[in-house]
Length: 465
Ligand SMILES: NC(=O)c1ccc[n+]([C@@H]2O[C@H](COP(=O)([O-])OP(=O)(O)OC[C@H]3O[C@@H](n4cnc5c(N)ncnc54)[C@H](O)[C@@H]3O)[C@@H](O)[C@H]2O)c1
Image (cartoon, rainbow, N blue to C red):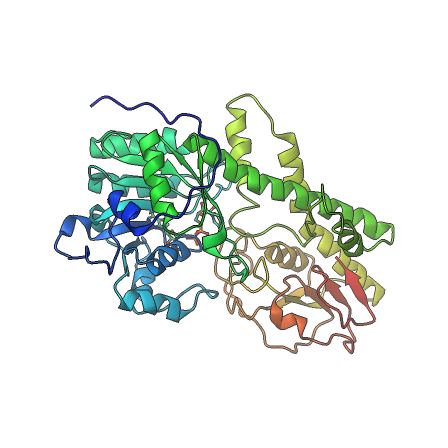
């Protein structure tokens, strides 16, 4: 069959939520509507999600809650096992949310990739980190796609959701799927890219109300993906290609990285000038146009902002372009943990103590408040830098009871969170967890270094960082 034409340019427009009959017309079943006879082993699930982490698991739940039957697949056998037992391994997702959809059979989790042939659509949510040399590491995406290919069936829709550089779906995913299956994208199976906009731990962020950008390999691919996502979000934003959708996600995260770098730089300058940057931001944010607030911090963390901009940086080199602003933002943000260390040194110095031999307590390992995600956390850089200077460093984090080995924390992996109160020469608040907002630091005799401006009952020796 001849390859159909690529998707024409489609204006960004709202796509109304699909009604049940539209959903069925698009070849998707709705559990509990009478078409769920369970007799066809080839299409037991409407959707399969590969990679059950911070992005994949909420996506499974969003579909399952809407009555869509979901198969979750992960290479880590412990995850499907926990989910099948109704247990969550992500702190801000409660067990009850899992057990509800497992017990009504809308959600099944497995580590068996052969079962992917049972799904109408397969969504890929695996990690896209950087290598040690800071180049894109697509090995997770590639191995996932190679595992899917032998099970690919006619008519299936494959959507990549992992954040990546423009061109990945077309240049990396499509050839691997076609070679491994003997099928042709756009005719035999459908291919799309749709970036995730998950905001972990934000109770105000409602999956349904966050518009979802979708780009298809062809017009039909796009149509299939629009129908699918129309089931779980109020607005689908179709764009003309997978590349546009991939570039959209990077633009969003680069925008954040650059703006965070700007406020981090202003924080340092204003601090030297004796000006409180937080008060400045509060005042600037009253401008009703042309400004939106970003907040300084101890450095970037998580799987997105410290990593994603460098996917574009790498790809841009292929076009002979050096992404100067993106890299400068990265440099400024990466320097922030050392700025915090310099403030700790100031605090100790004012107390007449050297760093060497001092006991330092870090509050918060998670990269943001009220989550358990410690990936790329700036707390690790701060702790390791202080230890290299001879300090004894301890930490408390109600969400991270033990430090798991990660890319950038080898020197301190395996340590346990200490209980509060804990005796120290200086306290460094790195994460604004809810638990810390309640603490009255005003009678604390040692200095406090506050990286988040969340402490209002302050000790006499208070240092903003
Ligand atoms: N975490 C966020 O807030 C966020 C937000 C938007 C986009 N993203 C992007 O989404 C993607 C996934 O991120 P995440 O935070 O969910 O990662 P994660 O590490 O939390 O989850 C990834 C899951 O994939 C599994 N996995 C790894 N290799 C696999 C394979 N070959 N087959 C099947 N499963 C495999 C892992 O066991 C893990 O459970 C990344 O590209 C990330 O940049 C993340």
